[in-house]
Length: 348
Image (cartoon, rainbow, N blue to C red):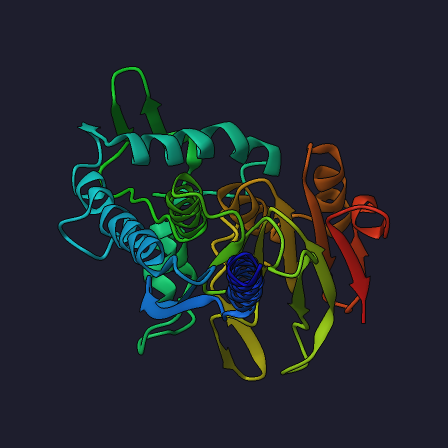
C-alpha cells in the first residue's frame, strides 16, 4: 500500500513538473514572439547620389538592407554622368556613335522612349547641356544670356536619342549631345534596391532616396504607411498625408534645388522648349507602381499645364498624383480622394 502510494505520488509529481515545464515553455515562446514583434526595425541611413538615403527593414534583416544599399551604389556607378567611368559618361563622350549598353541602361532609356511622348516630350533626358549651362546646385549657378541658351538648346531633343534594345546598344545622334538621368535614374535605382529586398523575403519596409521612395507592404502593425507631402512654400509644413501600401512615390518641386536673383527663383527642372526653368507648377507628387515611372511622370507633369498634367495622370493605369500650381491651388486625382481604398490622400 505504502509502496504503491509512493509510486503514484512520484508519478503525479512528474506529471505536474512536466505540465509546469510545458507552461513555462509556452510563456517563454509567447514573450519571444511578442518581443520579436516589438523589436525596432533595422534602419540604415547613408549619403549617395548627392542626397540622403534611408533603408528600413524588419529587425534581423540588416544584412539584406546592406545588399540593397550596395545595389544603389552600383546604379550610381552606371548612371552618374559626372563620373568618367560610368556608362552614361561613356555614352556622352561618344555622342554620334553607337555604344554598347548594359541591360540596366537599356531598360531606363527604353522606358524614356516609351513614356516621354505622353508628356509631350517635356520629359527629356538630353537636357544635360542646359543643366551644365545653368549650373544649378553648384557654386557657379547663374542666369545664362540668350545667346548661350540658344546654343545649348541646339544639342537638346529626345528624338536624338536612339535605343536598339535587341542589339544592346544606344546612340546620341550628334556630337555635343549628352544625357542626364537625374529625372529617372534615382527612381530606377530604388526599384532595383526594392527587388533585392523582396527576393530576400522582406515584405515590409521602405527605400528612400532624396524624398523619392518605395513602401513595401504595410507597417509592422498592419497599418498603411503614412507619408507627408511637403508644402512647397511653407518650411516644415505639409499639404496633407498619403496612406500607402506597396506604392512608389516621387516628387518634383521648384523648392528642391534653386537659386534666386532679384527675387526670381531659378530651379533645376528645365523646360526643353525654352531652356529655362518651368513655371507652370511649383510641386508635383506622383504615386505609381514603380519609382522609375513616378520619377519620370513627376518631372514631365511639372512642365505641363496643370489641368493637362492632371488629365494625363487620370488616364494612366495605377497612377495618381497631386499638383500644386503657381497660385497655390492643389489639384488631386480622383483615385486619391476615395478614403475607402489605397493609395489615399488626406489634405491637411
